[in-house]
Length: 131
Ligand SMILES: NC(=O)c1ccc[n+]([C@@H]2O[C@H](COP(=O)([O-])OP(=O)(O)OC[C@H]3O[C@@H](n4cnc5c(N)ncnc54)[C@H](OP(=O)(O)O)[C@@H]3O)[C@@H](O)[C@H]2O)c1
Image (cartoon, rainbow, N blue to C red; front, side, top):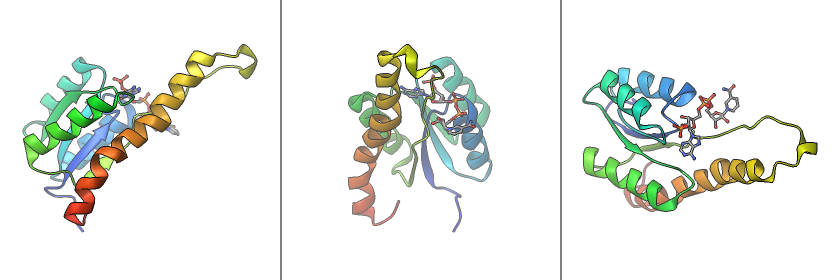
């Protein structure tokens, strides 16, 4: 199985593992669609990769923004073969500080963000019997 010409949506593509994965897969011929909140980083990465990259500013906690990210992948490249549900956050701190806002944000990104991605691509992947 080859990754060449596969359309790969990567959340959390603005840094770290997501950005590195985008570069690696694009170098192997994949078409990559980059999602994250920091547009300057997404734009720089997309420029670096070239025609095989497309980006859309996306907060994965927002279902509508995830919908728009997936739709933009379909508009740009015709389909979605892979969703790399990579966006995540790992806040550091002491539980005794009871940082409820940070805990909630972590759940929103790491759990709802992942489910928002699955919810958008699953019907399409079921229909195409692949993904
Ligand atoms: N590095 C490790 O050793 C390690 C170990 C275990 C697990 N992980 C997990 O692997 C994933 C990537 O880690 P990393 O080291 O590459 O971390 P990173 O450099 O901090 O990257 C996290 C990415 O997630 C994005 N992100 C955060 N909140 C978001 C939101 N609400 N909507 C959209 N994107 C969001 C960030 O982009 P924006 O800020 O631009 O939105 C960034 O691109 C994370 O899920 C992390 O928890 C990493």
